[in-house]
Amino acid sequence: MIRRKFAKVGLAAVAAVSALTLAACSSNGGGSSTETTAGGNGGDGDLIKVGFSQLGAESGWRTANTESVKASLTKENGIDLIFVDAQQKQENQIKALRDFIAQDVDIIAFSPVIETGWDEVLQEIKDAEIPVVLVDRTVDTTVEDPYVTWIGADFRLEGEMAGEWVKENYPDAKIFELQGTLGSGAQVDREEGFDAVVGADKIIGKATGNFTRAEGKTAVEAALQAYPDMDLIFAHNDDMGLGAIEAIEAAGKKPGEDIIIVTVDAVRDGLQALHDGKFNFVVECNPVFGDQIVDLVKKVYAGEEVPKETIVVDATFDQSITQEEIDARLY
Ligand code: GZL
Image (cartoon, rainbow, N blue to C red; front, side, top):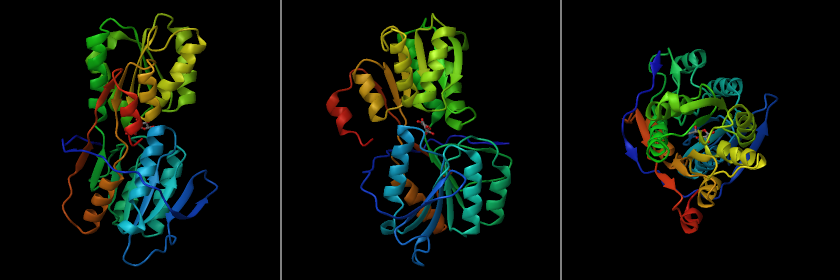
């Protein structure tokens, strides 16, 4: 079983997310939708044909990541992009990956919704000799050397940074952990990092909100009943934290005061909640790295050396953040 290990290659991921022009958009019965760059997926002979399977549109982070990918993987940048949104369903991603093989793309890029269940299709891609650029999420697979390069965040470190702040500021908190999609690399590693720092004994309950605002709200509504003395929530992303705010306020409590909220992502809505005093600490997970994906794709296509892993550097934010700083951010 191959488990992705980190190679600390810090890269500042800052890129303008510009307006986007797309020529074609279609959706198939499987609930996924396919878009191609201007000129359709026939493209010009000299473009690099890239099949990109995005896992869904579940959060503000994913939306910003998709915008960055589409703004960077353009014909102008030498890419003929076939972009498929899987609506957070692994079966849709596997179908998209097989379609990319059938379309004989030059490179496959994808962000796996969960870590496991990819062995068969990754072997088919390997047999088709199509290089894989893994984006964002990680895989656990028995396939030898399943991808050429991976770019994403250090999820375990994000969990550790959140844990260090909690340990320092609320050492006796009774913590409810609001987890992302179970079995996803982001959920597994953030949980590992956070729990290792705060201590499992401080965590009185866990439930998944599947990285969405609605499911985060539902999970916290139940948690407020089950754990009336909880006084801190660690949410694996801002969207679930925003759902938690709704649940906490509906229960007549003050988020950020009666119940401390710590989250990951640092999308604009999350930082606004931080500024408004409803979140208390936010760990960034930068989604804007489409330009780095293009760079990796071009090097892989040219057969050039690329790092096995590229870590997108993150920051942290507390309630001292200003409205000007929030307004100036890219996402
Ligand atoms: C992290 C990414 C996670 C975000 C969530 O890189 O995979 O998935 O933290 C998103 O907002 O749903």
